[in-house]
Length: 67
Image (cartoon, rainbow, N blue to C red):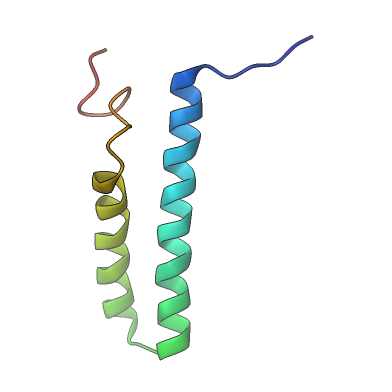
């Protein structure tokens, strides 16, 4: 049995990875600077959408998809 991912699935995994990286950076900043939780939440809320916005190759799914 051979397992392969479609191009759409590969892009979804890549976007998920970018979101994980954005979350890890936010958590790291919060821990290093010992910032208040509400500021960490605000940074996290902005980091993930900005990461998604910066990735111009994710037009295959989500709100901007053609299907």
